[in-house]
Each structure stands twice: as C-alpha cells, then as structure tokens.
Image (cartoon, rainbow, N blue to C red; front, side, top):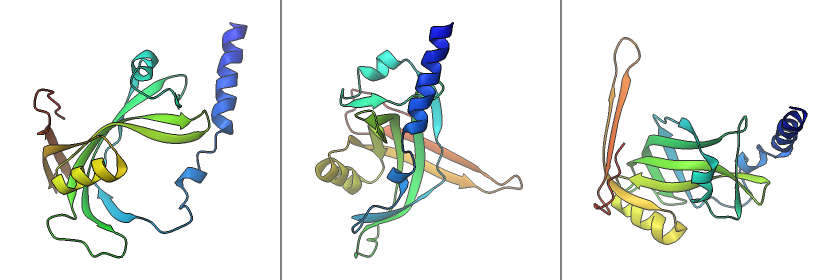
Amino acid sequence: AKCQAKLIRLEEDLCMNIDRVSPANRPDGTALGHQNWRHLLVAHWTCDEEILRGKVPQLLSLDRFNGSCYLSIVPFTIPMMRATAVPPIPLVSSMHEVNLRTYVHLQGSDPGVFFFSLDASNLAAVLGGKSVYHLPYFHADIDFHVREDASGGTVEFRSRRIENPEVEARF
C-alpha cells in the first residue's frame, strides 16, 4: 500500500510539473491558416494502456489522468477555414470533421494530441491535410444538423467513411 501511494504521488508530481499552458499560447510567427470551430463535442473513454501503446509511436509517452489513459472522439463543424492572407473560398472553406485521438507527451514533457484518424467531409481539406501536414485524414460522408427548440436545441451528427470502404468507420 505504501509503494502504491508513493507511485500515485510520483505520478501526480510528474503531472503537476508538466507545462500544460505554454503549448496553448500563440507561438511566434505567422499562422498558416485560420479556422472557426462550432458545435464541438469532446467525449472521453478510459482505454487500456497496452492497446494505445501498440498504436502510438514510442517517441510519445501516453498521458494519464488519475492513472488512466483516455481515447477521445471529437465531432465538430468548421463553418470557415482559410489560409492566412487569403479570403475564404466558397465550397472549400467549410466542412464537418470527426477526430479519434489520445493525449500524449513528447519525450515525457510537452503535452499534445495524437490523431488516429481525422474524418472530414471536404475532399480538398482531406487531400491537403494528408499531403501538407501528413495527418491521417479520410474522406467521409457527414450529416450535421442543428435543431433549435425551447430547451436550447440539439445537434445531430452522423459520419460514414467513404475512403477505404473495406474498413468500416462510422460515428
């Protein structure tokens, strides 16, 4: 019990010493682009560390909260995105997206997000994300509806991956 308490305390100390604020601050230099996100949901599930470890590069350590690793799914819509100094382009500057991700640290310190997949409704954004940023983007058929009512409203979000049809991916 004493060893377990010391281990938990050590884990808490490590988490407290990680700078989780600086990475969220705007870095020096010019941004490559701009996006507005709307109707974002971040849903988390605890996940067995061994499963995640087999899917995440060894250079990255898995983040833990209260001793557990988490897998997250994040659906949202982007009503406006554009490159810096370029106006939004009709039919290309908006999309819906759903991300499957976990939380990591680079060499045990810098916190970040590891994306398993990013499914998006905009084929141009998928192709750009793959080629320019080398991210695991997939083209998806996404239905997104907001219904306003007296209680504030509801959001309906459905996604079905179009790309790589032999691997079914739905949300």
